[in-house]
Length: 468
Image (tube, rainbow, N blue to C red):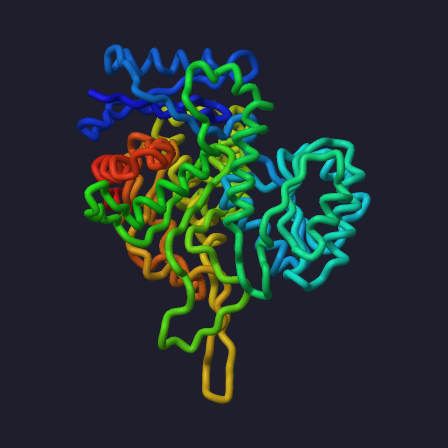
């Protein structure tokens, strides 16, 4: 046996997963409260003790960790034009596993600086202008950032002609210069910024949040948890090469949904551009092949009112079979008592409707849209965002989806709806459930043993139908 421990330090729970590299089997999972305010090692030790109650004592060959604790990796970005460099900066940040706390376009104001100070970001991503293009905006914003009272690293990923000048304006702060996120009009180049953001997370943010207390217990904190999820989804979709040169196949293009208590994260792995032969033109920046969006107002407990506002109390009432007045009463209660889980038929019905509403809203926002217009040659379409209609695999995780018998029916809220015909959501797909809550752990493992991680996912993910 060659056991490895995979750790996810979350804001609420520290989750541990043990796998055997020799047999490529899942040995067990467990969780405990994250104890970041005292000694984070206490929560980890408790989670491991609970795990070994199931597995027996284990001598781990390695211990790897990812983290979203203490609010995750909080970032603010700025760019020139909302649809261009500011959007490129946002995609770079989300793709690095960050939680976006603000996106600014054009020139920063004194009010903006006050808001940035109030947010205390972990990292600021400063962009603006193509290489050789507009200089004034990013230079102005560097001057404004220099007046911030709070200290945070700044990653400069804008017009290369003035990148060093911006760095000099920010002298005294931790500054990193990387390649422009949009070196020329309409071209995305977000990987260098993503790599630098993750590097800063590992070297600075982890220590600042108290993880040095756990260094003796783990070998490496490798990445933010959302980055681990993204790596897992890319591996599952694309497959990988085995050491002997053979190919371990993936399952193809996919959409993944992670419904949490405070946010709902959506991941897509596909091209998503207009299909050949269609009278469709694309508007905006090219979509990332691996895309992540975070709906910070959509969650099962902390953001429960965001679901209600997005889909309406009537939708929740209709799906749950609970009168609207009673729905409002229960939602208000759950918003105040976020630790409550369903214990009877009524609360299960409400959670079913809430989870369906969360997925419906989050996937609709993630997917692209078509806009119909008329030309001399007839009807044509303009596409913004990703076309997900041909995706045939949907992966779902999160407590509200894995601890219910109606997972497939809830997940079907991700499908294209004839009442919203211009949405580009999936039209039909198989639904796979992460019942053991291992996806982030497998993304973490994929950095060391990708073939093993992929084969474990293919064994552990369970296909689910539609159950009423």
